[in-house]
Length: 328
Image (cartoon, rainbow, N blue to C red; front, side, top):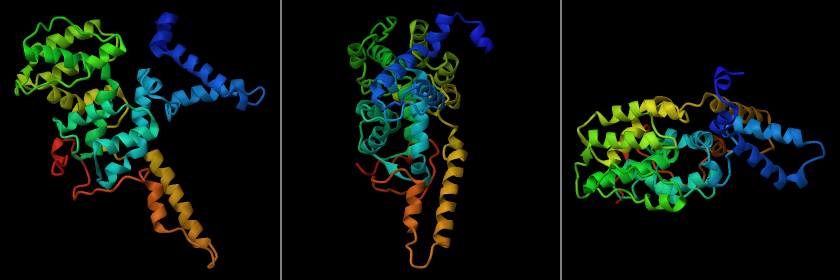
């Protein structure tokens, strides 16, 4: 038993790890599939369910309400998204907001469009939502927006109050779906292109975090981000969060920028498949059909239906400069 477990009361530990959430979901899945289970296989069902939770595959093809219900689920979904579609970055493809949303819906059929649009605005910094984005730019922005969505909604409201000169000492913590929907409008920064004072914004965020029940970035890292300039815009703040390696490490879903294209386990499996297919084509009798080379490429990339777009530079350096705005 871990030292962390010994130092915590049982109810607190169960709540922190969301154990009851997974037990309830396992029971719901059991009842839904009871007609397909063999007699005496219930223990094996629970074993396989919690193994999938541990591996992070339990969120695949699940509804959005379940995908976002716990921090572990959010991390698992982001990691699956990276593993499934990282070859887009390797191929140097640039996609639109709608195309990235289609990819997200392949893993979560009801993934909300507004979540994808808000992540895209972090990259684009404006409303030019038909621009093209690199995979590396989008996925780190999506990570920040998805994992810290409730916190960012409240931070947007605080920023808007500072921008309009209202009293920002009143901390807004959304507690209902209607309250969250009111906060989903992006801040209007047109009245003050230079944004707000970074020190004042940090004080408001510090007060917010003292009362906040959802996940939020560590205050030390927020202070580090806000210390880079005396004033900032809200989307500049979000972009700084998305690029910060310490915040990425805190979330724990994605690798560092330099390792975004690397997945050693999956690469080994793909190499095995390619080797098996190559060996099979060599040993086949002359009158049998060999596998066309285009099928090998299809094995290496999960993206099949979206049109390919290429740029001469294959890698993203994480900046918005590689986002192609010429399509407007």
